[in-house]
Image (cartoon, rainbow, N blue to C red; front, side, top):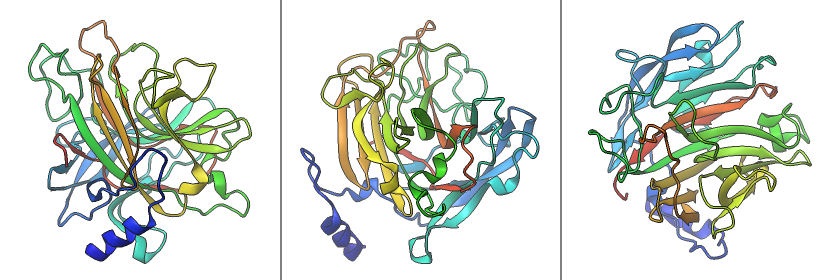
Length: 340
């Protein structure tokens, strides 16, 4: 472990205004042991479509997000794979994956999205921490894992007000020559949203417009894909800006990198959020163990119910116009409610 940490520290490139210090807590660490469970698959076109495997483990303060188990809940893996063939077991696999044997990580998910259906907007395979209708107040259980600001909750038990998350993503560099900068975004086109790899999403049926925390892909006018981190933040304040100058709801943390720099190898992401409607809200992003941006301020929407809540979604979500057949790989999403 010590030699590995030394190499990482020596290879960090300093970012202006950010200390070039790698925090091992925010990088991949293989679990000492792990077990396997299943979640039910819910398909928009065909209802329940069997089950899919998930990994369960913990170490230190980190533990895997408690996705709704198939034995008690429905729809833990949300599919929009069109029929035929719809979701098939080989679309979501659990194993050890990487660009080479020396770089394999386990456990990890193999996620494959086939050709989309042009009659619908999206195509996805995403684990969802709160499937189905929003639970009534005070009924959090194994089927609903939600987040809400502590200052707003008046009915016990409350959602989680703050948490750290971390995961790793591997986007293969397997496309034909001269097209490897946007392999997973082929077919999407310029000035379009290219996909989401992690997101926290309102559970209200009609939330107000806005951007919510998420590692996403956006494609600019020259058809160049970028990795960004969307966020509910105040445009123009330090650490927050818009992706689209003409769209006031396209706010993001002030971090943007070419997608081409993040293909072919595993990369580690970590995110901290303290949910608040006031100035004590916090959102911080680490990439490959290095803090790249933080923003402080109100980061939660107002809900007619008085109880705005976010769920967590993790997997692969993109427009149906994307025609790449390349899989994408993610390690299980971990969270911690205390500082690692």
